[in-house]
Length: 386
Image (tube, rainbow, N blue to C red; front, side, top):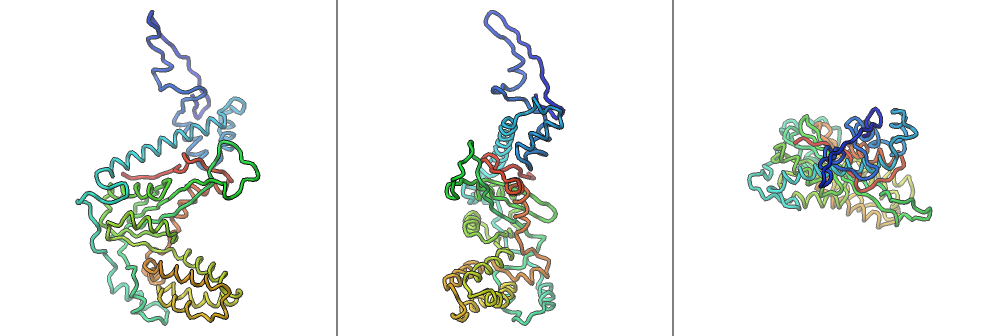
């Protein structure tokens, strides 16, 4: 048995008669193990897995726990720790999937469609009082038309009647059983897909991690249903990834009170990248950004599109880049709010909390330590409240 204090060995006993072995404590007191497997105490799991290879590589964790337990020569082998961690991870994921399936099976189809009429489809969204919105608008130091700024598809939701959901994807490199040759190309490299969702309702916070977008949304359905959150405004923040947005909207097409908001950082980044490749030189690009970004910050997407369409062709290096940016803004217009006014009202504009959870759960271990991931480890930590 592997424990936090070291490896412990026990003598086993058996009783037999003429028909054979009647009782064997090595097989009947505990579940049988495969050759070279060990029983793990809760202290060992905490030390080696939760406090160990969740953040560090298997090699570093093996070296640390064997040093702490004074078993550096005959301690736990690296491969044993790897297999035990996979086993614990698989058991955890299976438990969470079973829990979510038990909650969802009589309420939703596999594609997320609601089949229980008792579940709220989302009532009329509750917004902040118009007096409060106008007060914030009056303090805004801008020359833009206030009517145009208020005529925005994204409402100013009442945070007490909303659930903020930040969703982000990450695809770390997949680990192979054998080392790769140095000639492996980027095309040959396999990846493991992860989707992380940070859910916040009033003072409660949850983190969900699945091996696909639909798996995470399936977990999200179970979480929302078990905590009686359906009926509130689902305010979803993403980085604008088309596949992610389309999957969310398809999964929740039955729910009326839902809104996706494009994260400001990624909107700004997209504009900078496309203009850098489309305009002739840094000075022209920066001058264009100085006029474009304030329009988008105030939610004036139509004016931003009109401005891009009016750019002098002599300043454009690659016209298709400008066209691509215009199409991007038109496609995301329903998700581009008045960021400036939302900030004044204390409402969220960013999906960065979802990306931070991705850093903590996935990227921190994989990227900072230069390690690859196996499929079974793609959901190391999931925090539920059922």
